[in-house]
Length: 43
Image 1 (cartoon, helix red, strand yellow):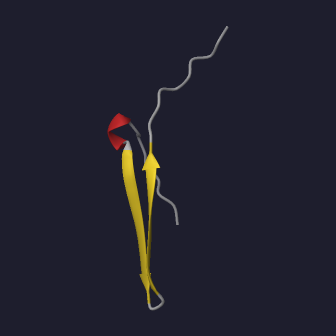
Image 2 (image 1 turned 180 degrees about the vertical axis):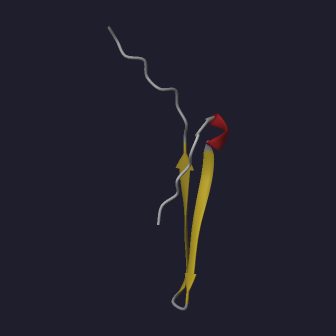
């Protein structure tokens, strides 16, 4: 499974939690997304 964020911007920065539940139990994971400026090419 994957998370796709389209038209990303600084407001999308933060913690994202993914949770899965089955008859085997429950698991979750939290990931941080940090938006940075695109580097400018050097000449």
